[in-house]
Image (cartoon, rainbow, N blue to C red):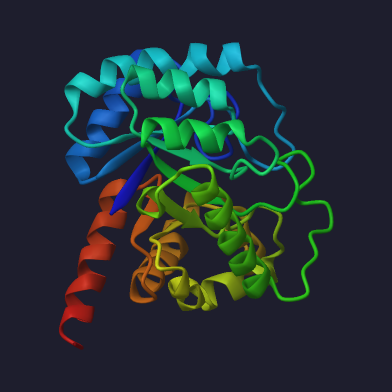
Length: 263
């Protein structure tokens, strides 16, 4: 599945400001759905490194009009990309059905209870630190093992809060408190997370680790993004979060066709 990214923000790293206007956001969401996106992920707070936090009220002001207008116009799920339980609750009430939480409710068990209460889908992402601190000397002994241990612990805590395991998807958090080497090791080790028996979501689209490896600026990162996406599907990842929906869908369908003929 491809999750299309809809940043309703002025400062996101790849498309900040392009879809801050609700009309522009709706048009772009409908375009992504027509291109094959099977989830639309709406976010009202940039999570790029060192991005400033925004208030709950401001985040709701950005995302709720878009979700309310979008839900009647598409037949695919809407995800709310937020760390804040109050924003998640308002978005679910407006018609979203998935919470995409970069913080994985590490510090606030209210999110766990909300997901249990509503039955919403829940994406729990691994991040070392916060967006304001995550790229200040991230350190691991074994990044694949530590992220896997984090997921196992989060699944236990979510189930203790009443969340069904079937609601949960994990995201290794490429670029969130990781160096280039950490990111590459996580990509190489994606199969290691299969033992959790939960779907994996991966977000690699246009990320800066591509520039650090290949020296390519933001407008030229699509080929590397697609290479990572194809690799991820071959390793068992089920959901790819992407800016370039049409190209990503085409790359994934080709990868799937090849894989089908190896079995």
